[in-house]
Image (cartoon, rainbow, N blue to C red; front, side, top):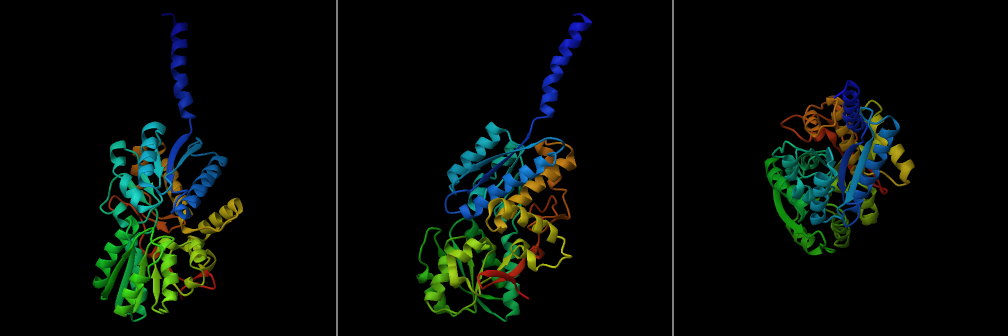
Amino acid sequence: MTIRRLLLTLALLLVPLSAKAEEPIKIGAVFSVTGPASFLGEPEKNTALMLADMINENGGVLGRQIEMIVYDDETDVNKCVLAVDKLLKKDHVVAVIGPSVSGNTLAVMNKFPAAKVPLISCAAAEKIVNPVNPWVFKTPQSDRHAVTRILEHAKEQGYKNIAIITVSNGFGQAGRAVLQELVPEMGFTLVADEVYGPKDTDMTAQLTSIKGKNPDAIICWGTNPGPAVIAKNRVQLGMDTPLYMSHGVASKKFIELAGSASEGLLLPAGRLIVATQISDDNPQKPVVTEYIEKYEAEFNQPISSFGGYAYDALMLVTKAIEMGGTADPTSIRDNIEKIDNFVATGGVFNFSAEDHNGLDASAFEMVIIENGDWNIVE
């Protein structure tokens, strides 16, 4: 072989390598854009695409553009499984954001260790990260921390007897388990434990049973529309027992669904929905303010905590890519685990090999619904 032909051959071999270096970084997402949990998935999809565009307009990550590949699981677990398989086996993404709901996340999370691709879930159930799956992380604050904040507030009010009503899906079952553990552990008596189905449209039977137990407070664990129905049924039954909600209803959609029955209800929520009320020296203030301004200008609709979960997830992936200097999935996984003091919409994240959520109870504010809006409880 002549030197000229050798050089030509080497040049041809190097072309694919050079082209590959300029290829976009494929990041997958599975959200419940439609179906019963669309109030979660729609803002998550909007946010992920908006943020990817913002990152790309600023030069991308490591000089490469982000290609977001988003699938809608329609709040259906089987469609979620198919979407995840497609992302991992056909699209060959370097990381996956989502799913939106706990049940779907729990159904697919064990696929990621075999694929050696990290999953950053936008669902809240503690079971997603406890026990730790090395390839699975999540951005929403954990139900354990939400329950802790609720019970701390209840203790401050002098309440003793607690009733719970939970939805029979993945999020509700996980929350119920934590409630059953922490209510007695924190010195309360669990006087009623009622369950409702995710498609139930009337919970007066469960609330009537609770009313007969005369609790000092009720804790409802679920996501829309069930909690809004419970809020209305409570008013219809003439009950004035204080009602706490989970962080699973932290969007204006809940207030719209419950209407005047939402007045006075309490819940732990991230600072995103009360951004104007947090102090200017809070490190989250500029982050949540910028996200709110960009999202509301882009989509002409109010923000929710749920869109923030997707924002934080994509920011964590890009941060891990920058830390490792590569979009290799193993490097992304390893570096997410090293991220600490990372200020985001949901709180300040401090990950470790033992903690794949990175948040604690300080990520929450206790809020009350007054005049159709959220207010921090002083």
